[in-house]
Amino acid sequence: MTADRRLLLVHAHPDDETINNGATMARYVAEGVQVTLLTCTLGEEGEVLVPELELLGPEHADQLGGYRIAELRAAMEALGVTDWRFLGGPGRYRDSGMMGTPANDKPRAFWRADLDEAVAHAVAVVRERRPQVLVTYDEQGGYGHPDHIQAHRVAMAAVERAADPAYRPDLGEAWDVAKVYWCCMPRSVVREGVEAMAALGEESPFDSLGDIDQVPFAVPDEVVTAAVDGRAHAGRKDAAMRAHATQITVDGPFFALSNNLGQEVLGVEHYRLVRGERGPAGRGSNGWEDDLFAGLPG
Image 1 (tube, one colour):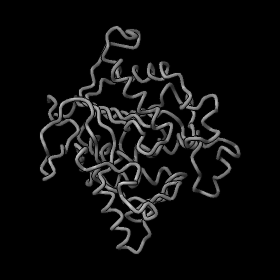
Image 2 (cartoon, one colour):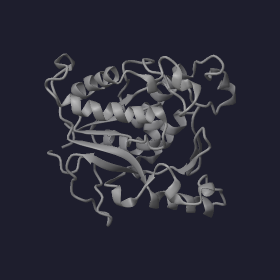
Image 3 (tube, rainbow, N blue to C red):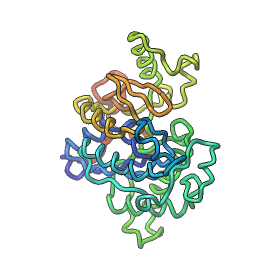
């Protein structure tokens, strides 16, 4: 029944897809869903965790972006995703770096991109792939990275324009995405992760904040609408994370990002429905959907 189901994910940099949605992507591929990943930049400004590759970084040869294409390819192979592409083509838009850094001002920085042009590239993908479900970030990009915010803007505008027959008919026939979800992390899950780290004698990266409410990407449980259980595919997510070796160091049930943020590697990934009708609740007691396609025909 899933042969005609199609999922599109819009992310800012290589590795964002695996961290946020790796288990979800692997699960849906296994169920026969057509999964498409649209990545907006090559991640050229990422910090390099592998010492022998540090010269790839922007302060040296500035070749990290090309290397990360290969990492993304390996990650997609691990998840089973065969349809992955870059917005406007590889290298059309550059990683903007963290907010307020000089990288924001580089000519190809995604943060500086002409929004109409970028949206048109995304509309072409939406109309070609015709997804019923689209996944991206919230309006803050999860934690305020300019490329995440811009990816949100592009994705949300593309959903609106793709459904308008009067908009750029040269980009294909109009298509209305039925459901749009934003990636999220319930505060209860973040709290559980902190407690798990404490039980292992590890210092939580959030201890300095003093309050889970201050964790930028954690949201109140009541705004969460879906929890996709991909634990059966956690091994694929783990392999995909390891493929992003310049950015992620995997250590047991936790992983470290380039900013040394540790999070539990979860096989259950959470979402917030912002467009479309909420489907029936799954088998859990919290009333969340357990399938992003819940309530859709077929």
